[in-house]
Image (cartoon, rainbow, N blue to C red; front, side, top):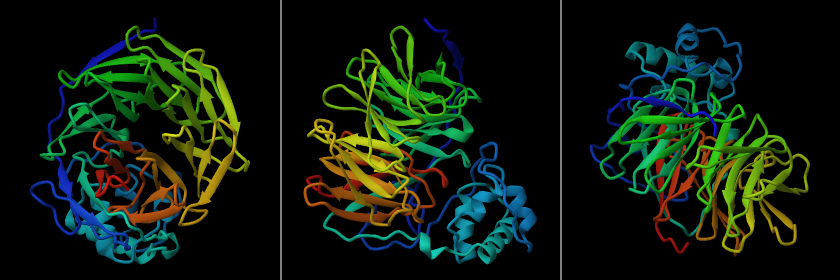
Length: 438
């Protein structure tokens, strides 16, 4: 049995806010979204604490001008200047001010100076707008801003009691949202955890992947107590429960897939092809793995931990997420080539469709709802939500209201809703499909 390290923390209890376009309601409200293009106009809360995180993304030289020193001081607390120079940009100071308010707390004069500088030097790249497709389906999107800014909230999941949980990767925390009242509570994790993904179990415990300290963690929401299960891989990534009661996970940089027995704490890991990423279980209890470092999908035997590989046709293909339809076919996002793909495990046949926004759209997260495929185009601004109907081979898409980016993982609730997020602007969202038959 591997060592278990236990922590006990008192949960933080700030209240979050439910975000709506053009106003901040006192109570939860829904955003009706139609297929037309939505302007990225949002009202954000600024009076929130700021997460402490190390900058990422590489540096770039900013142009001279009033406000440059403020940008270099404040806007690099969670990322580097390259994130700015490579952004899609905004034409107005108001839009830049709204985005920065979702990331860091600023005095009014500083916020205005930074917004003016960014609007002057980094206007909108209209080439990054998504190509949106009309269609028959109507959806509603609700969004909540999380309490701690700069945390990079991500990977929401539904617990058995209907609450929505998320990870604040850069702040080493997990959070709980009551979608009825909008109340939020954040639970601190060991500072080195930097949780990547989260998954509840049927008893209500919350499991997370400690991406920076090589652990799988278990949180008891009632007490805040945390149990850590060390892995041999350096970066546990995404997790899924199996009908056998065990937790399976990927470790991207370590190139491993692992299995944790929650009853004993025992962990078994096996080496894989490059950069295993998304992971799901099909109807035959086979564990499917996406690979972000090679043009393959993997079918893992849950007991023997042996992997069978399926090579996808184009060698440039890289897959982040995947899902299973009721006929046993495996659907995946060809992130590197802007496509949606399908593998028939019985025959090995592969078919792909170009995503509406083209080869640079970078499809990322994926889910199956009533045998319709839902995914996002993370390379676009705003981030676009896409629906694909396999029966008619038709697309429909919508702009995410706060689509600064990026949806990295999604979750289907028991009611057939889709949980989404915007990691850059610290939001958790819920998509309700008006007619689930669609």
